[in-house]
Every structure is written in structure tokens, then in C-alpha cells.
Image (cartoon, rainbow, N blue to C red):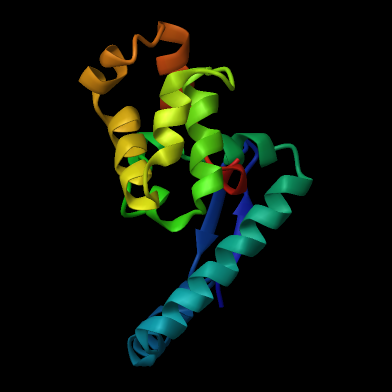
Length: 154
């Protein structure tokens, strides 16, 4: 059974086998388990580890190592995000990222597009530096686009 141990220096260790005398039977048992069950046991052990670490002083240290910067590994695009949300949310995101006023013609043009076209435009805005330059975005606006995440991921 996995267990968690938090060391004095604040690092947390998740161990699959607590006692070396049972190492051979444990390995044989682990091989016999299906992939899904092994994953479930590891996840449960890690969850216990994170839960106990958050109570202790090492929780902040563990959170520092466990929390990835999502935008370094994921960028929203038409396929994985923009194509899956409502058109009114796309409109709001367009206005927010470009800092547009209600009477701006760029907003009016964007509002007339179909949802798939809006998704493609937002994908270009998020991924293409030439599109950002064509809209005349400031460094602050580009930085806001580069750091933006959906509310559910914050």
C-alpha cells in the first residue's frame, strides 16, 4: 500500500512498498494489477501525500513543485477551447483581450462572424505574433494574452 512521508527538509516521498522484506511479493502483486488499478492506487497515494503535506509546513514547498505553469504547456486554440465555447463568450474575450469599446468597428466586425470563424480569429490572436502586431497590441496586452487562462483553470 502506498504511503507518504514528509521529511524534515520539507520534501514529500511517496513510497509504494513500506518494508523491504515484502518487496518481492509486492512487485509480483503490482505486476498482476491492471494498469488502471495501479494508476488509481498511485493517485490515491499521491492525494494522501498532498493532503498531509498541505497540513504541515512543507505544503507550500510541495505546491511549488507540483503546480505547473499551464500556459507553458497549453495554449487555447480553435480545436481545444475556442471552438467549444458559446459565441457570446468569444465576443467578450475578443473585447477583453483587445481592450475595445462598444462602438469600435473591430468589435462590430468580429460580432458578425460565425462561431468557427471567431474561434479561428482568437486562435490567431493567441498564437500568432503577426496577428498581434496587426492589431497594434501593446506589450501589456500581449502579456495579458500570454498569461490568460479560462476561469475554470485559475
